[in-house]
Image 1 (cartoon, rainbow, N blue to C red):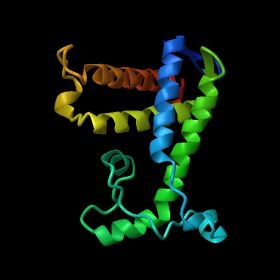
Image 2 (image 1 turned 180 degrees about the horizontal axis):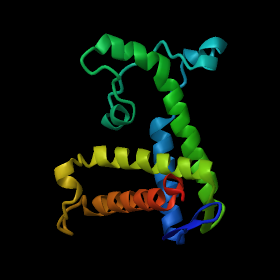
Image 3 (image 1 turned 90 degrees about the vertical axis):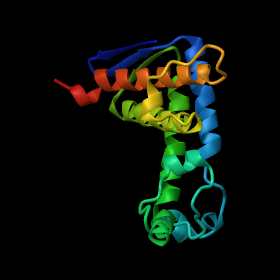
Length: 178
């Protein structure tokens, strides 16, 4: 993969295997983050403003990391905040992953304008949070090299690749305009 700054954005040149990996990760992220159907879908006002009166704290550690408690020391306030925000946050994650799937399906050479760059950086962040949570990565483990026989080694390599990609996008992207 090559990532370079171009006049109107960022260019990414990928190999087919890299596209397939990102497509697979996007599908997994969509499977995880797509909100379950609830009464919000039948209440037009609740759907319009994104209120989910049946929201609960996620039991999946990845979802808890992606959508953390707003008030860790106050479960009641956190739940109330979650009812008013989590549905729209999940919808935003889903829409971003779907846009990335569309973008990467367009070929091996991508030119990202500002909005697409934002989507890609956010998408990679979601992937890193999800994978890092599953791998139980902490700051002390982030730079650790695992033995090739460790069954997690390939996933740590994937985490490292996603980290590199996100860092390169930020370095070459719109945060560093002249």
